[in-house]
Length: 100
Image 1 (tube, rainbow, N blue to C red):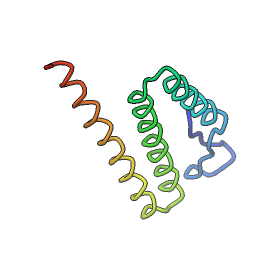
Image 2 (tube, one colour; image 1 turned 30 degrees about the vertical axis):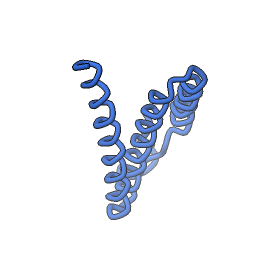
Image 3 (tube, rainbow, N blue to C red; image 1 turned 90 degrees about the vertical axis):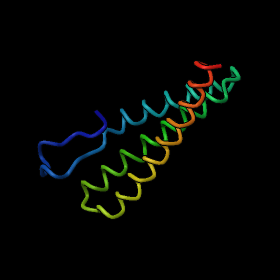
């Protein structure tokens, strides 16, 4: 779990699990590197888009929990745009493969 609530802190305050975040993004960077070495540029770009979108979503949630809803709104919109780009791009590739 990337966000965990400490028993000693208030219920609205959360601490980030930096070990989990580091492991997640180390795996993401490793996966992108392997895909780039293998020549899978489109898949590496997709993984990068999903990683960025997930990071924006998580940061938006952290800002919301800190009471910075206005700033969080922009991060959530950015994640929505990144997810939309991914799904439109992957959807067109899938339809071309299916119909072509």
